[in-house]
Image (tube, rainbow, N blue to C red; front, side):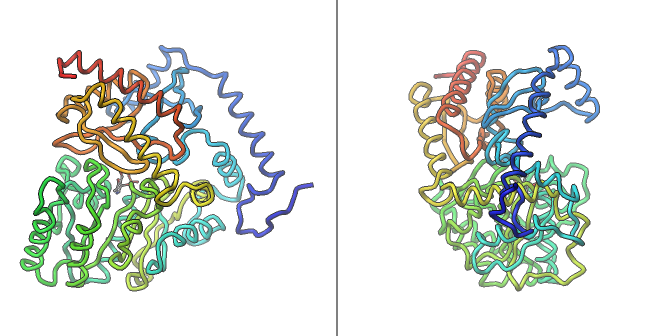
Length: 460
Ligand SMILES: Cc1ncc(COP(=O)(O)O)c(C=O)c1O
């Protein structure tokens, strides 16, 4: 008979032994069958070309996943293996084929509905909302779920504008990235990402922290003060990334944020932290709490590793009923897995200054430092923290970054670029990356760097 150790309908049914066993059996059957289905090299290439044709442009990397994986390893549909140190751009917390998360997903998928609307939430929405608010600090009272980081950001922006109406302007940092909707493309500081789009012209920029400039904080404050003087009463809020993800893993000390956020508070504009990429990866769910910025933050957004997205906000920013809605709160599987992975981060020692995520950052840094002993010119600045780390290859010129990424892919390691001037190469590895996986991945990286050095006649 099935055991009944947890009987609340709110708890995940995966805790039930009989249910988990059935989920395990289904997963095993699917994996057995999948293992027998490989694409021959020619067909594999043909499928990739077809997908590229359907999408109307080439894939960044010519790859088609098989659905098979283990931790940081992922197998392609032709049977080749890669080390996945980018995880769908930061989406996979425990890497590929994590048994517990797959079982959680299978059990959630066997529930009533594939997606949950805001009209009729299920227990998964309650679980993930509770889990998020548990980590968001005393000031954050509410959470609204959505499907993508950009959608969560749109909701945050609407809440800010409604509260500060008729102010129409937002301040953002140079090199910021906030998503791909019309409004987010304008907040994002990348002209190529909004080419051909009409703009409303309500975005004001200030420089992000520059560690090489002792006057950096003052310069940012001056720029913000300048905007406040020029547009009195017209600025609704300011958006912060604690670590700029797409912008190149740039970060700043607490004093920079307290100075800039302090000025926002002083003049009464909203402080919004976009944690779509940093969510979990710095060693806490929310990086702003690690920096003890609770007193400053009005709204925070999360996404990616959450398996959906969320906007969390104080009581003062709770919008009037018509403003934020939409059909979907999330997929049932996404919400169940998101809630489950937060429980595991809490229970298995991943969080906190001595937690496994913080230690992972140190382990990756040491690997880079050891590589730098053999190839000192190839490894420039090493930046980031926890499960989001990056380095500058040689001088960070775009063609060198591209060459290293391509060579790494060919050697079996998936990475991605970030930022420009200098360009960096980033890693968003699983939070449970093992030493063996790190060693193998860095061996691929070293071979890739050696190839690029030779092809481009670079110094060692
Ligand atoms: C900081 C930040 N905000 C927002 C987004 C947009 O998230 P999504 O692509 O899920 O819409 C991203 C995605 O990379 C991001 O890094």
